[in-house]
Structures are given as C-alpha cells and as structure tokens.
Length: 214
Ligand code: SF4
Picture (cartoon, rainbow, N blue to C red):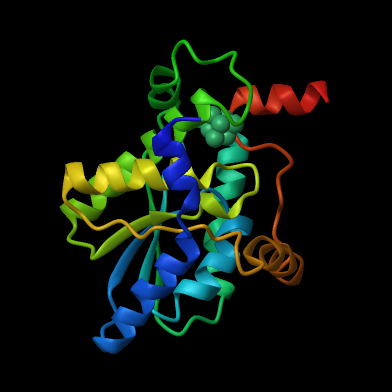
C-alpha cells in the first residue's frame, strides 16, 4: 500500500460530511447539489438523508450500463423513486447522455480486469468528471455521487477522484462514505418499502458476464 493510500484510509469521510452539513446548518443555507446516481436503490438512502439539507438534482449519467433495455429500466426506476419520496427540499431529475461508446473508449485495455479494479476506477472517473463538468457549467454549489454506498465500491478511490476533479474543474465536491451509519442497510429497507428493482450486476457487460459465470 502506498503512503498516500494509507493516509487516505485513515480519513473518516462520514465524519467530514457531518462537519460540512453542520457548517451548512450554521450558515442557515440550503445549497444546491448535483448528485450522480447509479440506480434507484443506491440513491434511496442518499436522497432520504441529503434532501434534508440540499436542493438536489439527480444526475443520471451511466453510459456503462448494458444493455440499453436495462439502462431504460433503471432510468424509469430512478424517476419513479424521486416522485415517490417525500423530501424536505425539492429533488429533481436530469438525464445525461447515453453513449455506450464513451464507456468503452474510457476503459479500453482494462476490459479483462475483475470488478473492483482499475476498470472500475476509470468508470468512476468518467461518471464523476461529467457530473463535475455539468455542476460547474450550471453553477451548483456541490457535486457528488451515490456510488460510495455500495460495499463493492472503493470509497477511498471515489473520494480521491472526486477531490482531484473538484480542484481541476473548480467546483466543490462533497466527500462521502454513504455505507456508514447503516446507509447500505437502510437502502435495502427502502428498496423493499418502495418496491424498487434491485439489479444483480453492477451495470457493464463485463460485470454481467461475471454474474453469469458465478
Ligand atoms: S463493474 Fe461497475 S463500476 Fe466496474 S466498470 Fe463495470 S459498471 Fe463500472
């Protein structure tokens, strides 16, 4: 493990998020947040939690999802959940492009790497970069992603990418590790409560093949 990774491992992202929210409350503000979402189940707890403090736009940018039919199913589920959730502050939906070629060119050469490795880091970065770009262009106060809620996603890597893009694109990034405070468990409860479709593979053709082989 590199010194940087060891240092990152020590950070408590949930505590950092709590501190940022405390600051927002003290300032008596309701900032805008462009929240990248991978799917309705992962967004469920995150929206229930963050919509108490932010005006959120859910940004659905996931050209990694295969096949198109699955993508469309996940989009509809996301929209349905947003409409059903009783949120303190408004939650809106914004659809990103669905150009599968953007994903394939972004992960070229990494196709054979197993889920959780370098291919996924490139996939995180592609989705976060687009979220940061739109957040900057449209003047959002923050951007972030729901991805850290999954036990299969690397929160250290996600936050490292998010903070690097924030510095590069000049738009604030909200650090997170949404699986903490029983966030993942709560997302399963909410998915059951709202009857959400919970897919059994991450999204890309490679993760689907891994599922089929198991
Ligand atoms: S397994 Fe998931 S995170 Fe990894 S490349 Fe595929 S869609 Fe992206």
